[in-house]
Length: 225
Ligand SMILES: N[C@@H](CCC(=O)N[C@@H](CS)C(=O)NCC(=O)O)C(=O)O
Image 1 (cartoon, helix red, strand yellow):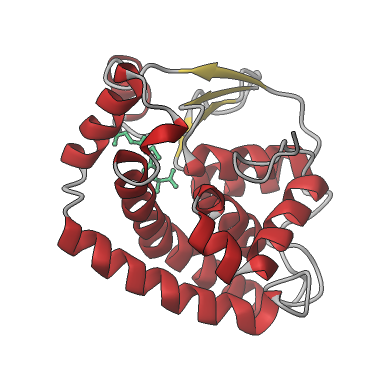
Image 2 (cartoon, protein in one colour; image 1 turned 45 degrees about the vertical axis):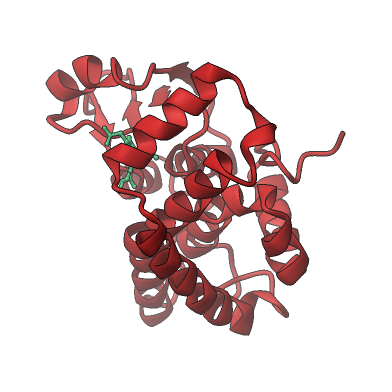
C-alpha cells in the first residue's frame, strides 16, 4: 500500500497510526504542498491528504480522507479491531472521532501555525518553512481572532478528554478505538507548545502510549533525543 501524505500533517499521522496498529506494511510518498493538487484531484476529486492507494488487485484505486481510510482498513484487515464490540460504545467512539476530525483537528491547526509563525518561529526559522507557514495561515484564514476561538475549543476538548484519558488508556470502552487514534494524532502538534505540555501532562503521556501501541515514531516535541 502507498500513503500519499504531507510529512507534517496531523491527519496523515492519524492514517499512519491506523496502518501501524493493524501492522499493515506500507510506503509513504511525501507530496509537495501546492503541487499536491495536480496529483490528488484526478485521483480522488479532492485536494486533501491523506490518500491511500491500496495497490492491490480488486481493491479501490484510491481512498481519500482519514476516516474513509480507517473504514477501508477495518474491512480489509479486521484483526486487530479498531471497532468496539458494543454497538452503542462504537457509536460513541465514532461521534467523538467525527468531532475530533471536524472541530478539534482544525483548532489544533490554527493554534499550531499561529505559534510557529510567532513565539515558536525558532523551531525552524528558515525562509522555506516560514513561507509554507504563511501559505497555510492565508489558506485557512488563521487570524488572531480565529486563533482565540480555536484556543477555547481546545480548552473544551481538554475537559472532555481528561474525563476519560486521565485515568484510563481508552477514551471509550475497554479497547483502543478510532477515537483514541484521532485524539492522539490530531492533538499531537501541541506537543511543541510548552504551555500545553505543562498544563496537560496526562494528554501527552496518552499520546505517547497510543504511538507506541501503533508502532509510530513519537511526534516532534515528544520524541526522545
Ligand atoms: N477530513 C480530512 C482532512 C484532511 C486535511 O485537512 N488535510 C490537509 C493537510 S493537514 C490538506 O491536505 N490540505 C491541503 C488542501 O486542502 O489542499 C481527513 O480526515 O483526511
